[in-house]
Image (cartoon, rainbow, N blue to C red; front, side, top):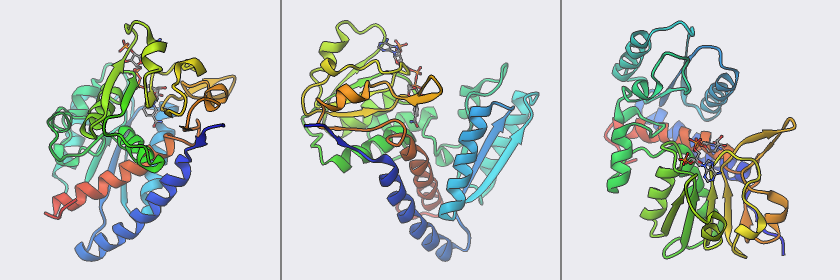
Length: 286
Ligand code: NAP
């Protein structure tokens, strides 16, 4: 039987609707909405599209957006000064420095300047440390979105074999930490992993984030497994994931499509993090 399709667009839509209600309540109680500041340096088209989506998402749920655009010629000190100003601005609950930034700017160093209280991307060393220690904090948006999709499938993570394909700081590592915190037995694979198909075939939950079009084939997948495809690849002017969707769908129990799976969850979780940061800033429980 073909796998159930996990409809990330629908789940994200529900989450946004819930957030709109909660943001309105926060705004009513505190006299100002949560605020999200995005910083875009230079003219990178894909980055401009991502930032536009984040700003539109803010408007949709009632979060105030601060859309900062700097020329590609901006210096490290100029971008750093903007981040410091936003750190100090009480109307800004969350800050994102859109990566990649143009050379010779150092995107990792700039992200590191964001106050941990406003780190709604969850990418600073402080946020990564809190996650690794199992302490409360702001979690990276895409792995958090995957956790919500897994909850949607009803899969029991406690004791499950979870395999994460990819070990990036942005996704693979925090994903593994979240699964571990949910009591899964976690294996993280990467380009030096030996016997990748065999390792993947052990997984009750298989999460692919490598950036290689349709790499995960049907015989890499345990029958009935939940397969989450994080990859976004452009092939012949169309988007596809890291999983060979049609054949894998015949083996898996549930699977996310690309597009319409993980992607919509990322911005929804960013908006959720912004509300969470705003609540923490006024001393409320998140
Ligand atoms: P990344 O930083 O390039 O990391 C890719 C990972 O895949 C690395 O750990 C790499 O191993 C591993 N890898 C590459 N080729 C491999 C191979 N042939 N066999 C096994 N492992 C291999 O990428 P990322 O930022 O994590 O993103 C991964 C994908 O997810 C991309 O397509 C990206 O566009 C997508 N993404 C989507 C969203 C979303 O919102 N939907 C968010 C984030 C990322 P090494 O460490 O050994 O090099």
